[in-house]
Image (cartoon, rainbow, N blue to C red; front, side, top):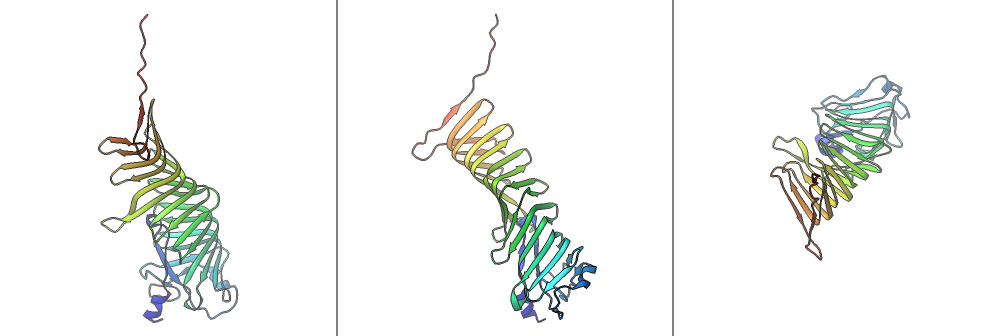
Length: 293
C-alpha cells in the first residue's frame, strides 16, 4: 500500500478526550468471499507495526481484535463482526461487548461506523464506561452509549445518566443526558444534562477543564445545597458559577438571587441579582438560646 493511499484510508476515532484514546484502523483486503472465516476464531488478530494486515493510524501501537465465537467478514455488506466476549484493543484503550460490528466505507476500506451490543465496556487507563449498546459515527466523531445503568467511572469522577452518554471527540467533551449526575470527591452535581470538557496540559495529557450542568440543577457540596438553572465549575481555579433562580441553603441560612459565585480557594462567595430586578435576598436563622428559669 502506498503512503498516499494509506493516508486516505486512515480515520481516527477518539472515544472521549481523557477517558478514551484515539484508535484508527482500516479493513484488510481479503481474498475470500465466504461469509465466515473460521480461522479467525482461533486467536486474536494482531496487526504488525509495518501496516501489514490491518492499517493503523498509530503504527507504534498494535491493534487486536478477539472473540470467543469467531470473527466474520461479509464482503457484500463490507462488515466485520466479532461475537462472544468480543474485544478491540489498541494501546491502553479497548471496547468490549457481546458483539462488535465494524462497518467499512466502500473501496477505501476504512471503518466509519462501529456498533457494540450487549454488556458494552469502554476502557482507557483507569476510566471505564458502561452501557448496553455503543455506536460510533466517524463522520460526526460521536460515540453514543445507551441502555440501562449508564456509567463512566474514573479515579476522581463518576458520571451516570438515564437516557444516553455522548462522547464528542471534536469538542473534547462528554455529555450525560437524562437525570445526569456527576460525583466528584464530596460534591454531587445533578441536572437534566451534565457535560465534562477536557483540554491538554503542558505535557500533552488530557485533563478535565470544566464541568457544566443544565436544567433543574441541584448541587450538594460540603453541607450546602445549591439550586439553579445552570452550573459551571473549573477544577483549576476551584471556582463555581451558578445562574438562573439561584438558591443556596447552608445550614439554616438561605440565599437567593440570579447569579452566584463561589471561590473555594479564596473562601469568597457572592450572590447577585439580575433581570428586571437586581435585588437579592438572604435569610439568616437566629441562634437558639435557652433562658435560665
